[in-house]
Amino acid sequence: MKCKDREGNIVSNNEGQDKLLHTLYDTKAGRVLLKALVQPEVSKLGSTFLDSRFSKPIITPFIRKNQLDMSPYEDEEYESYNHFFTRRIKKGMRPFAEDTDRVCAPCDSKLSIYPIDEDGTFEIKNTIYTMESLLRSKKLAKHYQGGILCVFRLTVDDYHHYAYIDEGTKTKNYHIPVANDAYPVYTENTREFSILKSEHFGNILMMEVGALLVGKIVNHHEECKVHRGMEKGYFEFGGSTVILAFEKDQIEPDADILANWNEGYETVVKLGEGIGTKKKEQ
Image (tube, rainbow, N blue to C red; front, side, top):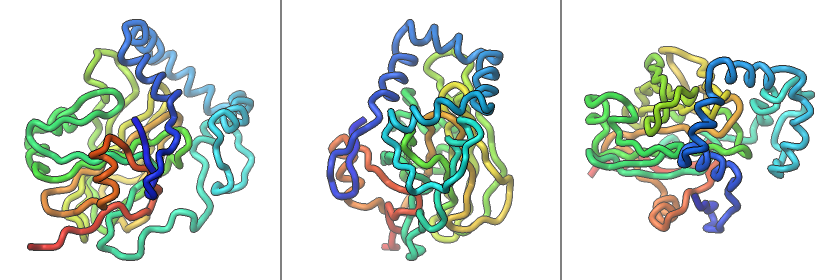
């Protein structure tokens, strides 16, 4: 997918990651390889390796290959690759917009915007979904008809922590064990979602889609009170996706983001950055 920044400049996308996903999901040989790689014993072995000190030697080459800017992150000695991957940003580097009527990005990502309608489809991790197939709930999907779906696609250069975008009360976490419905392979690409009964933007559906292969979703909370900018969780190794669904007439995305999407571009956004505004009552 092509990307633009907020100034309208075309930016480099992680083509290597996109090509890998295409090969694994869209070719016969790739699907055979994927099915072997995601067997529980193989996945567990990979996860154990990435959590161990033996994975430390791959950190520096990874930073160089992906030209990662490490200056925004806390200085520390990483004990494993997953320790590096879940690194924390320096305090104050991702402030939320002060205007509480501004909708802010929950994470660093490449943003796509979709209208939610009964027959509408959207792509997440090389799989085409409707709202009903994404949620596995016709009733919940119908509740968001006429609203807006925001898909935040994280790549290796992004900060892999994500936050709540408003004050409110979140429900418990609902777990969907299979995130790719296109092919019958048992992956760890799981989905989790909850509802944020927010102060300013209605009932926001928040979903996390886990990373390819050994990656996993780490959510910190079950049902509880939350506040704007509070960390909700993080992803371990791999590219990942955060999804926000807004009810009808709740928000208005920024014009530049809509223009980019209509031209076939995702928009690069950062955690806490304004991406839209609460819709004014007519």
